[in-house]
Picture 1 (cartoon, rainbow, N blue to C red):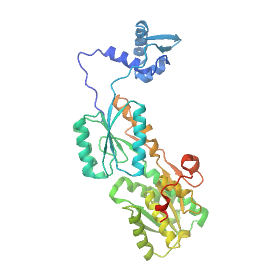
Picture 2: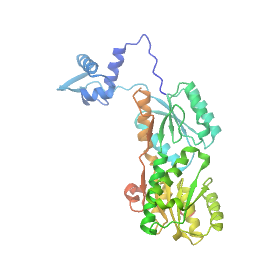
Picture 3: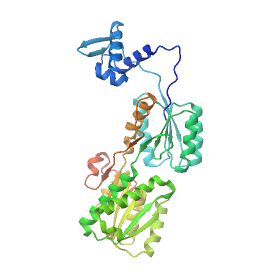
Picture 4: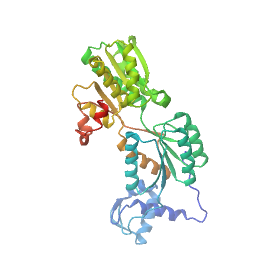
Length: 380
């Protein structure tokens, strides 16, 4: 929860409000209406109007029309905020998030203090202590383990440091990230429609590749997937559902799937996965067994590797739900600034998901069409 800034009894509230009016003008010569000043400075109409008239008399602003004011003084910048960012680790997804946040922070004149949680609960706790000692104004917490979220949140709460939790909710923090249940529903519905169009709705088995170590939040992707699938294929309720643990790297997941297919006879199988690593591993293993025509896969994240796979002729990846990590900064930094400026924010802000397929991937990601993205590893 955001804590209010302590007032100094020697401060003049009128002068502080006048400063907010001046800060509303971002550049010398910028013209704003009374309404725009009210919105940017978060002031009521009467107060904003009175302060504008005073600043005109003081020679800092000028009136250029009915209800229109021009800045004659230049931009007024407050103290630069210092925001702590505890990154998740070195995956492509988390690196995209980091680059995005760094770009927007620089644009908004925000100083970032960045640490790496290294996919470690212990490291995340250490980093929380470090950011508290650094005295940052707010923390962006991006760590994987649901079980340590209460301990991390407690540290920041005691330090009176507001937190935005990325992807994994933390008690008392504003949440930003995936709507995991909805993302699962999107994938399930798409795969169900594909089965209706290509297999006349005849499905023998559903394989759900999960990641229990990540906690209950990611479980919602699987729950949503099954609900979305059943909405398109009501009869799927009678099909066998196999739950597999997708923990590990690409090669580890491949080996687990090989063991599964050695004992499971190839049948028409719909595969829903918690991430793209599991999806790409499943496609390669089904191909190894010469059974690719018996599977269809829907995935999550729409990473560069998955987008490259969608462009491969004959792929059994029907689509992947996009999370757009390269856009996270455009949401997270303004959200952080609103919190720091005591502006109202929603308790949870969700990513706008989109299902990418071979038909729309080049429209959504035109710049990476034809890029060579570690294909040798994925095709091994």
